[in-house]
Every structure is written in structure tokens, then in C-alpha cells.
Image (cartoon, rainbow, N blue to C red; front, side):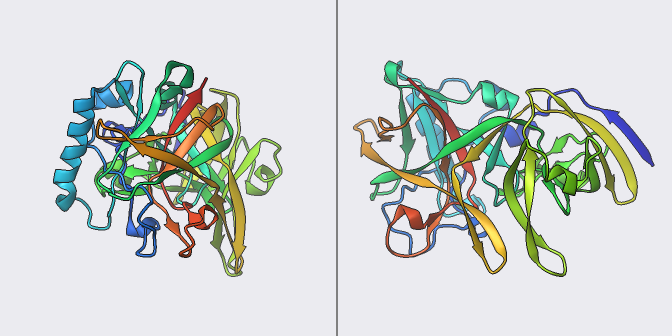
Length: 353
């Protein structure tokens, strides 16, 4: 079978998947959930209920009562949710007029990737904190031991297609799945390469084999000047980790993909309409395997009389920031350098003066 599809439309979240908009679950046993050795002063926010699809696209302003109601709703559903989750998070930008905007969840190019992805619709709705306007970053929590908030900074941003380019194939992004109540790989539509979410992932494939980008195979791609090392994959007889990449492109620039799913052949033109954010991270290797360890900063917080905690963002420079919704300490030192959020999903916001 030969498939020839030209795709110029924007790849958007399916309604149920994009419903997250920061109401992310913040701990999962399969995603480095916080262990018993984690100090109690790591913030443990609670999650909010998923909003409607129109709200997800518009990221509409919420009142304080609306935000609190969403949090209370998630608390009431906690016993019904996936038992592997232990903590929930709800982060907002509070504007000077008293309205609240949800922080946007980001996909990752893979579970261990340092590269976050947002659709163009999400990009246009990233909550922005204007310090000159006295906006603030707040969150809700049930914890009695709140001292600080972990925060990651962004080293680079640009545009790309939603594909991680590996020696072992081209893979679909890693995102929240409402059906599985977990963060898992998405899938490509086998005919169009649209990204599939939730229950639809069973209709596609998360990996394209024998794939090329503009006629280039992996070895040629790895020599390009506009690639970004996002993660690594350890496979094969020698079990040596090999890097995977995304390709930085001009906004809406087209890339031609040829691929196989089984023995079926297909090709598609995909536009670079995803914003990518590269987290500041340190590369770490152990026994032939390597991962990026995102650099975290402890941001002081204070408790307000209005029922939420406020983060001190006065020292942040303008730009994008990401909050991990899970993570763990590798020891009991409570040292930020020993905090790992490699496997964590993130919510993002932007600071301007």
C-alpha cells in the first residue's frame, strides 16, 4: 500500500487531551513519583478538574471561586483516580484584576526528554506574568509544609515538528492520556501523521520505522547544524545509548517525511507549528546510559490570607519557565542539586516586565 498525504493543517490537541491546561497530576509511580525520602517541604499541590474544550482552547479567565471549585472537584475524585498518583497540582497566573489563568501543560518529545512541546494554540495562550502590572504566580495545596516551589528555566526556544528523530525510528510525543489517566506516548495517524490522543492511540503507531526527514536518514540528520539533542535511547545488541533529536525550523516551515508502518509506505508534509522549549539541563551518564537532568531552582513562597500560596518571582529574568509536577531527591540532603525531575511532566508560563 502506498500512501501520499499532504498535511498543511495545524496539528492540534484532540479535545479530551488538550483539556488539561495545568490541571496535571503531580506524582506517578511510573514517573519517578516522590518517594518516602522526599522532604515534606516540597510543595504538594492538588489538581483541578478538566475544563471544557472551548475553555481549553481559549484559556479563559477564571474567578477565584471557579479555581477553588475545580480544585475541590479533583479532591473529591481522588479516590476514583489512578492509584499510582499520590499528589495533584493546580498552578495559576493571578492577574492584577483578580482573574486566574491556568498554566499550560507541555508535551515532551519523550518521557526522559529535556524538550517540551506546545501547539500553536497553546503558545498563543501561555499565561504571562507581567511584573510591572503586579501579576503573580500562585498555587493551591493541602500540604502543611510549604517552603518553596521547584522551577526550571528555558535555555532555548523555537519551532519544530512533533517528532523525535531516533536511530531506531521517529517517535510521537509524550503527553497526558485521559483514558489511561497517565502520561504515555501519543501515536501517529497511519495515513496523515496527525497526532492521536487518549483512546485513539490504539488506531495509530507511536514509532515510524525506516523513516527519513527531507530525504535524510538518522546518520545524516545527526550532522545537521539545526538539531537539538533532546534525549537518548539504549537499544541493540551493544546496548549503547544513542542520542535522539528534534530539528529547529522556521515557523510553519514544511518538512517532508517518508516512513513505514510495518510494510506499508507513507509520506506526508508536516508544518513546524509546535513551539519547543529546551530546559536548562545537565547531561549525566551511568553504565553506558545517559539522561538530561533538568536544573532546578528553589523559589520561595508565602501563604496568603486568600487561600493560596504565592511564589516569589522577583529574581526571575524575563522568559519561559517550567514547573515539574513530580520529582524526587536522590538523598536526604534536601539539596536542589540532588532533585531529579527527568521523568516529570511540566506546566509552563512566561515572565515579562
